[in-house]
Each structure stands twice: as structure tokens, then as C-alpha cells.
Length: 359
Ligand code: V47
Image (cartoon, rainbow, N blue to C red; front, side, top):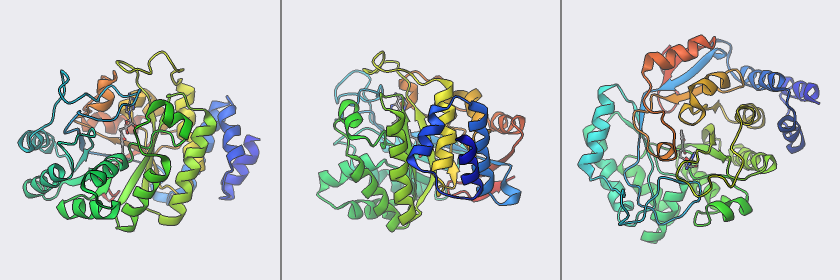
């Protein structure tokens, strides 16, 4: 069956749900890796077949106060809970300043659903960032936050996004997607918007000319069928809008979470299959990201042979996965470049929109 799938990849034919399931069910990991790599190579222009992208960035999480309760999240706190925080604009700028000194070209901003840090706060923050760092690309807000801001101000998604774009928003990250399956969402993140709304907000962003990413959080009790269904829903929207740049399979970390011990953690096989299957199924996404903060640098490097073409960035700050036990944060640029080179690829520094900054 994997050989038939190879034929389809070579003929650039679309992979079905059943074929994706067949890949997940196989344990022929090296063949699966070669299929992911093949799909990646057939997508790239000849000089780019060997490129792996990275950037200089920081993740800024301005508040951990969150009215939603997700059982996989160790980051969220109640308003007056010990350890809760909300940065002032100056504190946020200070954190960016440190990363700018290391050459950051992108700030990735996401935070908790905090009624005291909603649209007016973020409009001020974005404007302040653009005044101080006009060239810094602001990739910010999950669809879940956009929905929250809209409801508080009784605005449509379009109006909310327009205000943020006017303040300096350049693109959107892919968070908050978790797993689209209703039953898994009900069990793990019942306060979050359903899949249809997540997709509607990204569609609206694309219509406004914003590019965005998409994630899938694995290891929260979902089945492989749920993962494939998630990818196919993204593929369908991408057929319509072409606004997604990158897909990022995320791997749950469990420290200090309610879900710890209730689900089977992902194995290395699972994580590598997520990379390969997403590359094969998401034939209309240009990039698949191996997010080293969650995969670890070793598995992220191996992912490059499974179809991933992006290692994310230096990530000088990050709090969400860190709260759940990841100790990884802040890679030196030379280290990232060597990881890529040692895997046989050419490191390419990019900006957020995949313009090449240095090969
Ligand atoms: O939305 C929450 C996930 C996401 C945990 O767009 C967890 O370029 C693991 O979206 N263990 C935020 N994951 C991260 C994210 C992201 C990361 C890198 C690049 C991009 C991009 C986006 O992290 C959340 C949620 O899905 N998350 N808790 C946890 N315990």
C-alpha cells in the first residue's frame, strides 16, 4: 500500500483519508520518512530542494491570565492566582528589546484570554511596538483570542482584525486549533471556539490579505483518525483561500497539567509520522515546521528527513510549552544552522513571509 501511495505522490495526486490512515498504521518508519521527503522535494523548486528555513524570533506571551480552562495547559492562571502576570507596555517592549539586540525579525505574540488585556491593550501594544521597531514583523493572536476580543467589543471578526491590522498586525500564528474533533475539544478545551469558528477566523484573515499558520496539538487523547480529519479540514480551507503558509504539528507536554497521566504520551514514531503525514496530506501547504521547542532538537533535526522544511527560529522567549515542562528556549543561530547542515541541508534565514534573508 505504501508503494501505491508513493506512485500517487509522484503523480501529484491527492492522498485520501484512508491512504493517510494507512501511513499512520504502518511502522515502516524509514519508508514513511522517504515518502514525506519525496513529497517535500517534488514541491520545491530545484535550487530549494535542499533548503531548510529558520528565523530570528521571540515568543512574547504578554499575559497568562485566562478565563478558559484547558486540561493540557500549564500556562493559564486565574486573575489573582499566584504567578499570574500581565506585562505593562514598557515591560513587553523591554523583552522585545533584548531579542532585537540578537537580530530578531519577528515577534510572535499570544496570551491568555484576559478581559483586562483585550483589544484596547493589544492595539496600544502593537502601536508601541511599531513606533519603536517599525521593521519588526508582528505575528500575533490565535483565532481563539480574536473571537474573545470580538465578543468583548461586540465587533465582527473582520472589524476586530481590521483594527489590529491598523495597529500593526502583520500575520497570524497557528495556535488554538488543538484538534478539531468536537468530542476531543469538549473533553480537553470546552471553553475554546469550535473548529468552524477557528476556520472562519483564518478565512477572514486571509480575505483581508493576512497570511497565517495552522497547528495541530497531538497527545491529548485524539485518535489518528482525528488528526487526519483535522488536516483535511485545513486542506479544504487552503484550497479556497491559499492563505496558510505553514503547518506545525505540536506535541503535548504534561508537567503541571490536568491531563498528565490520563493519555498516552506521543512516541518518537508518532511525532515523525505527524511530520510525514502532514507533508503528504497537506499538498497545498508550502511549509511544514518542526518546532524544536516541543520536539526537542534531536527529533526536530530528524524531522528534516521526514518532510519538514522549517525549524522555526531562535525563540529567545517562550512561556507556554515552558510552563508544561520544556526546558528548551533560545538557540544560538550557529547552533540552528549546524543542526541543519549536519542533516545534509542548507540553512536559509527567512523573514516571517519566507522572503530569503541569507543563504
Ligand atoms: O495554541 C498549549 C499549544 C500552542 C501545551 O504559528 C501546548 O508559527 C504543548 O501555536 N504542550 C501555542 N503544546 C504554540 C503555537 C505555535 C508554536 C510555534 C509556531 C507557531 C506558528 C505556533 O501551544 C497553543 C496550544 O495548541 N499548547 N499547552 C502543552 N502543554
